Length: 510
Image (cartoon, rainbow, N blue to C red; front, side, top):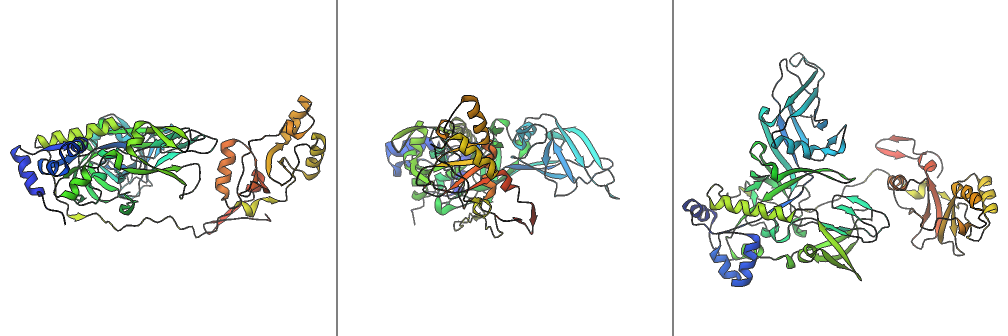
């Protein structure tokens, strides 16, 4: 075990006396590199960290107080954003990703929380069914955070140790929680603050635990326990946190919307790392160039997306990342400038004696293994619905001949294939109609060459979403060698007529 350098109690005594030595994580990295780790660890008592990014698993418990006559609210809204009401009469939980029933994702729970902390007026609506002790059935009023009895920020998962970076190999733009991903590896989105990361600076979780006092949203908060999806073995630890929303600062709690993805809340989190031994010091001194994450291809609709390469936060922060034979622009979805401000603010609080460190009452679990959701109900696959042996054509076929075959077969989509049955294009009834206008003779003059396809083992909900995204009604089904196996259309999807026992039942032959 590493030699003990100091205890949290000794550090708090130094805070009280005004002679504590505090550096931000960035400053400590530089000191350790210039003066050596051993000297830095003996000179510095506390290292402050910071991150400021979108933390979708955030929200607040609110108590609105009783109306007169009282109401047991079964539904509630703040500025038309639904408030969860599976709680007591006038308690509710507003989640950061809930969104307005009138404005959509442009205004959500994250914006409501920011408005509350900013002292703005919000419209509260509530509905109930009426009881002997809660006779009122409807309420509508204007409130501010000062009218609430309690407003407690409770975030089930914040401050990942590190985040995956995301890119997109497909030919269409993707809208994700790591930003807009341009086609054909057009950019890389990432999050996290690297060498300022609160959990990475104590990556072995030696000093953090239940009850640890932290910087949260511009106020003081506490670690409640491990966060959801906590996975220490892969350096993907998270924390569950709570704090008094009334004492927070809107500068460090900002509602936001990711374009075409959804609403969220940007949260400022900072954790003081007491330098109690050399292992903690080594972790706290880890620079960006030694903090790695993986670049993931988000165009693959699976939890097991392909890993394209490992990349350091130093390279990510440079704004240019090598990917294969190309250089791709990288942009952070977090604010590195605000992360520095969080760490600097926490440092100032400690130096001024207004923030003392706390001993955890219990450690965070280090043995958690994350599992994916078990899918034990049958899910219809494309292979079950597709039309096998569909009508196909050759690029040299005449438009007149193909149009006659389409009429006889009563089909609207014809995959165009080569001699090996590999897909090279597609024509539809619209293409045939257009051919008449331009006096075209063969399919290769009118066929669409960039074809959106489906794979036989894909689930039908994925394929339905793809049709919607591209505003098309039919997809050729191909194997790994791009050979045509079948065709699936919106008419085929309509055969999913009903749901029984929690699973979708396919009626009729595929």
